[in-house]
Length: 249
Length: 164
Image (tube, rainbow over all chains, first blue to last red; front, side):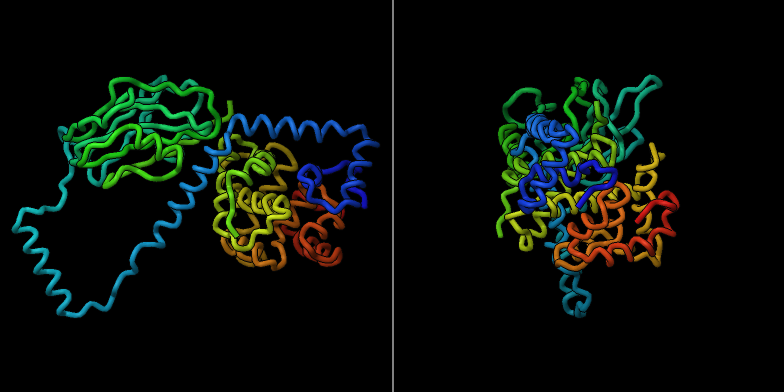
């Protein structure tokens, strides 16, 4: 069996390097490589393997894979909606809602700063400094080495919080607080910017930012542990995540 | 079977990333896609053959990247890239065989049913595998592969005139 243009395709080379081809086919490909003086391509794969594993460590990738897998399973675990409520059930629910309101359990109101109000759970707002001003980043944004980021949080009534990020190499950066210790007391009343901007290094792939909040105290060590292992956040905490992709250096 | 992602990544992760880099030509997107390949593998762990995961991982990476390419907004860099974009876009055609969503494609892939025509086209027109090699990779007859490509060719202007 010959290959197009008599060159061993990368696909076949990878299969050969993985050692999963039948012996006869592997011998045939090795002979082709030798005849073409291209045995170095196998050595290059070995070098590339080492480089990639150094840049993207296995434990970090495994944790990120586990995190994504868990996140994608989450909606499936939601209880299915029940459409066939009886009048009696609806009545009981209405009564419970009335009592809850009367006893002071009120629906969460948006946090406002000046005329700007923020609704919803605790979250981050990350802006990038540009030549012409600042740009609010979202999940479609692409980061670059050297980008200067300004991180802000909206506590939405939560008392304690930690802001951290982890890159594809597994390096964790604490943004709030900037040193290990207890979670800080969050300020309410809308968006609060962290005192220092954050400059991106040359780590490839992505930067994942998290805001972990809770009404109970917890520590940065708990957050760092969860980031390393892909789970196990502090009890009764709320986690907001924003993963931003990075352009190749 | 249980899947040790960390161990599997050590042995095959770099291969998957190189595949994603080749197809997407964007480091950040390739790293992102590589993670998703392993997520997909984790989801389908019951059907993984631990003795030879390379072919399955390369195939899964190809499908994941093709689906990414469908939504990428960049101009093809060369003829091979153009071919890839056209193959990826086949999924948008209501009558194309590969119209199924990513999940369906992977369902078929993992259940041992015939590979999608998109994969066959990528292997032949982009990776430059011979018909025999493609047939081996997708466990089909050479004539079956040739037939798939013949019907596909008219929808791929970038490969018009190429041998199959």
